[in-house]
Image (tube, rainbow, N blue to C red; front, side):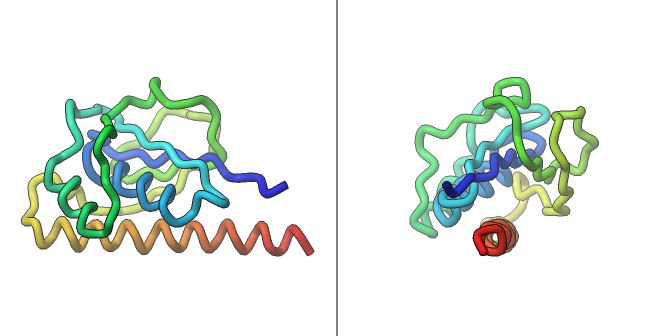
Length: 137
């Protein structure tokens, strides 16, 4: 009876930020979130440094590939936009998260951005769990 929210995490290339957010949502919030990610202009690969810093958290991204908005799985309850760009109407509310693109930064800064995304995703999960808890009373 626990309805999960379908959340799409979007960044520019679907190579760093949105891949990390999707992975954290799947790891920590699979009870309340069904996560996907996409890019407005998808890259060819997930950035190797993104894979490395996520492995430091025990989360592997092997098998993950960047995809575009048109390749996502249908309707969503929420779009989290980290691209900094306006998105086409995808039929769901959009939340803008201002998160620096880590593609050309140092490994240390990449880790800091990873940790910021992890914190933001955990807050979103907590918000959804509160809603489920209050709806069940």
